[in-house]
Length: 638
Image (cartoon, rainbow, N blue to C red; front, side):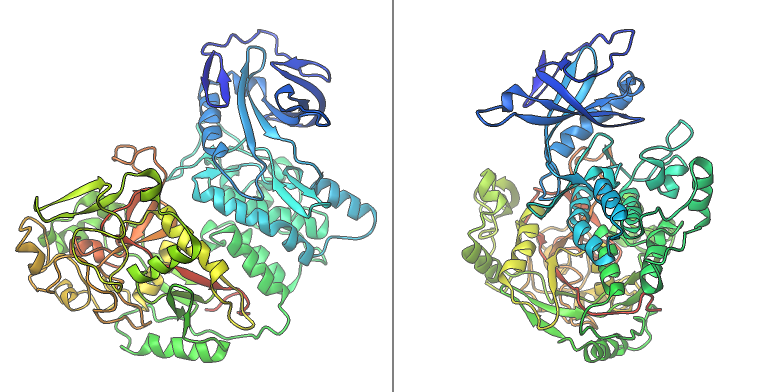
């Protein structure tokens, strides 16, 4: 037997010519099957007893998921099944049912072993309530499913798609008031760009919950889980699916957007569902939590005010003060302060609206314009395509990158241990004795980067995991605005770019002239090139060889500092690595903003980079956002 942790499998299993059929009382390895819990085209789930988990008074119940014979005989699909299990087993969330083992048996091939989640499925709850004449209200549905929305966003951030979100895979434990997402038997790792499967028909999942993309045969992606969650929420509210029909009639209704018209879903609530179930996935909410925020606003909040929002200017220059005036008008209309102070950071209000994000010019044109700075073509190709981006809810975002003193207070008050201390590998910095950069070495970390730092310098040598911990801790240690709920997190990269541009459609918030960047940001310039002449940079001199104190350079129209240069900043988005890159196979996150050691090319509004989540460096820092969750806005602010 070959083994890996809690998993084991035969290296060359021999499957019988006649498929083995599980039945109550039969044995598979050490497991005794008791009751079939469900079955589908991909396999069967059974309640079983695991003697390794039995103890006096405890039966040792687990759930085992067997693959269908055609699936387990397909080497590519079983290899994907094993790889996805490895990723899914590492997922930890209060609303995710834990995966325990991956086993292999000569008769049945690979099978999953899962924790047995007590309770009833939401399908059982729905049937029970329908039979009793007590439909589930939207308010109840939101309360039930919001932990699932957070769990799905969490697994998507880990590059995993569940692939079979539906009421049968959601277990409600009424006694404990807990809900759990079960059955990762169809889960897959996703990658970009999205591709079609070679075979015809639905690529994945249960027909009723399949997105238009799955009906077209595309490989699973996070948007499919979001679609399935919206279908599930609709079905729980009114007892019927949003799209009528079966098989190809269902497919046609999905593609045509023919939603049913139940009495339970009308008005603004229906508008949100129409957006979530739009055939064009660019029109749908970008996360499960975003969908639930829209539904909560549509449902209505006691005392919440309606605010009409003017769109952010999408062309530059319209007027230097245009976005700033719009920011002020929104703050007054919504009754929100322009600036808030948290335990460890100051944040500025960013009004909702729309802007053209990302560089619309072809890569060839960008290469020509930036030729003096020797840009790498692959970096420009990795930038997102230009599109109109809409921010549908107000945000607060850090006025500047988190400083050394702010980060030090966070560590002191929470007891958090940074990743470089936990793994003992340290970070990066400049060795003046050797006159070169070194790392990772224990000598360097957030406290010491080689050059002098004050409390007002941006903290560096922090990993994405450290940044995520900082943002999460703000939810426990920061006061909440009166009448408004805040949720702190890392920004998405489009939220970051929206805030950076402040209405500009140019390379920088101040315009397109790269020569002007020396007045607005800390990047490679004449000061640094005297020491490192091979670095491509500006001719101007900032006087800073390394990082500069935050807020040294002018703020943009929204009042944000260091959006161009000084330190790169972690974003929440997953950045699938290029298979040929040095980070291939590692979970990576997006970096935005450019840094003191970067070419001006990397400081543009649309520039992006990636690093593994545990990576820390002397030019990477933190900026956080806080969602404002109780301001009632129109569904469409245009």
